[in-house]
Figure 1: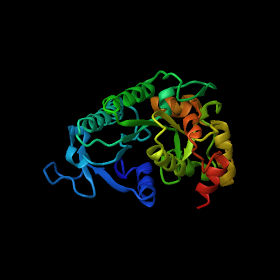
Figure 2: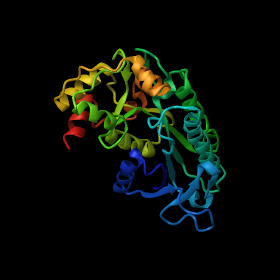
Figure 3: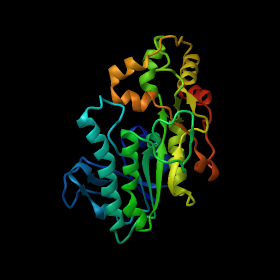
Figure 4: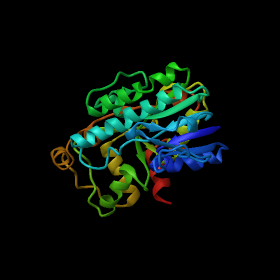
Length: 303
């Protein structure tokens, strides 16, 4: 297939592109660096600028599918009002721009796989969340709900829409795990808050393989949880990571300290409990490369 990919330079996108190419697809990254003119897109890339509401519809015309990953990094910087505005607008407005454009094309793609997040479910304690669970409450839950709603025009135009609700992505090259490795290697890692909150994680390999699976598996549409089948409590995550690194994990970060240092981001990303299961992926036949945390960390950290 000819596949357009936004967010191609991010952690997930940079791992996804080689996988798509290896599976025989022609990949067209969506880029923001070109000037807005008639030559802005080329045979190898498509120009867009979501902040300015600009997108080269001609470049998208004739692609078979779109994988939309772009969005403001939620884990970088304190969540002040300006940051929260960027988080929301980069997802909601950017997705709407793409989906509205695709819906208006004469030659429409048959599929768009649009990133979302398990933040959709909010803080739900020990309850198991599946794709049929109702949205939660809070900033991230509201953003994710509106993010997915922004795909409406594409869906109504007959395009198969997959909303990939991605969990905590584990990679030593970026994201949560990369931030944790430094303190844990120095022996100053520990549980966050009570440690009882569930973290629904997924390895970087399974993220990209699951996104490709959603791209080619016609039975998948609507929300699809991309998380491992075995979410763990923060205490178990901490213990397993410490064991893999052969370091003690005895210095906890109290909930109050996390809130003081990180503000609302700590509440929504570190202290909230979201126990999510990948029901639709498993039912469609996806097989996880890293189904358990120990297997994932063993491979990720032994490279």
